[in-house]
Amino acid sequence: MSVYKKFTKYVTLIGLINITGQLKGIIVLPIITKLLGAMDFGIWTQLRVTVNLLTPFILLDLPSSIVRFLAAEKNKEEIQEGVYSVLALVFLLASTAALFFIIFSSPISKFFQADAILVKIFAFVLIFECINTVMLSVLEAFQEMKKYSAFIISQLIGELLLIIGFILSGYGLYGVIISLLIIRFITFSFLFAFIYKRIGIKIPTFSPMKKYFHFSLPSLLGSISYWVVAASDRYLIGLFLGVIFVGFYAPAYAIGSVLTFFIIPPTFILSIMLPKSFDENRMDEVKNLLRYSLKYFLLITIPSVFGLSILSKQMLVIFSTNQIADNAYFITPFIALSILFYGIACFLNQILVLAKKTKIIGALWFIAALLNLGLNILLIPRLGIISAALTTLIAYIFVFALACYFSFKEFQFEIEWNFIIKSITASVLMVFFIILLNPSGLLNVLVAIILAALVYTALIFLFKGVTKKEIIFFKNLIQPAIKIAKK
Image 1: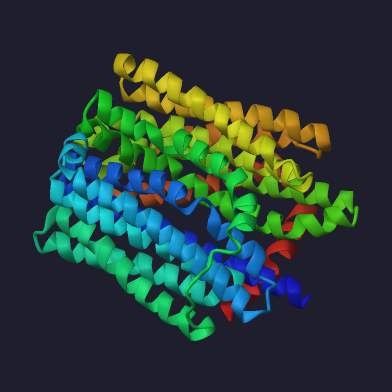
Image 2 (image 1 turned 90 degrees about the vertical axis):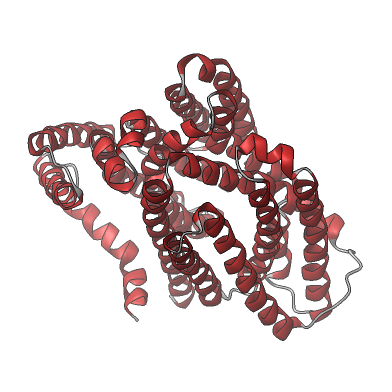
């Protein structure tokens, strides 16, 4: 029980990080769009996407090697060698990338349609982002999850406060980028102080790098391919249509992708609980965990897709501007539905992880990336931003379909199709209720969301979509985490 409590405590902490991150994104979105406009939000989005693109290339997934090989390591010299070898290599790669951006800041800034100084500041943000990621992985390896959570949450809150302060002080987009740099430098200082106190310092010889690369490089392809599917459309929209259209597309995409919040906690729990049950051949337990976890994910996510779709324009008006809402409200339904398929695929991929066939997952994402990239290049110049949303949906459906095929070749668990039909029916009726309310403005939309949730819940129980036995199962699953969260 103590180990289970420890795991559920980690889940609670990770869930708190996700909530903080979502709140930060929800707050920053209207601040930048309303005060700075769609153009600056488009530039901001492209810079963030660039960080997400370059980070996997620079890190080479070496933080996962630190977690894998140092978690049980007791020899201080081995720990020092592993940590500082990775830190030194990542610092070298990040500095090289940053130097490239500084030297070629002028042509790069023209691509982003931004000032060259923003690109130069961004280059230093990239360095600290990569180094901090490595040092955070050291906290994971030491199972210092409280400190890990504290650093992440402090960084998110610090960014938010500085961004608000700089924008209100009139520094505009410069203030936003400088905020990232300041907070990452402060985070770096505290992280390095902790690591120095814990293990000291050592000049590395890079002796463990061959072992680390052997472990980390196979997963790099999957990480990069996922980025192509999830973020490359912003680049292509900027290239073919201009950064202003990125400013239209990105807020609508952000609202639709809020549903990713419902994916991380259950899949994280499964990644902890399933391997032991699987290795001990308790297959009924494995299948029940997958069955109920997927069902509860769908219970929340299906109506959320309908709700976000019908309220897309109102929410964009609230969190951005009328101009963005008029030009991009039709994007959110495609993205919300994409996240639904992505979430189901994440549950199915748990089977492939248990079967140690992670190469299949990487291959799926690689093919999906090629499909997504090709369709975007073909369609964005002809059909505009709606084609980017459509190709995102196609790519996620592709991953979902092949995940079904390969996962169920290993073993199958029950998918409750009757429940899915009931959930969709209840969601459609809920949509009619929202249409009757026709809410506008923040307060009215919030009231409509609460009332719609109550209508959906009542309909699900009326349709007997959820049984008493399942409610008890769910309560027993999350009760330890709730108790820990209250402490």
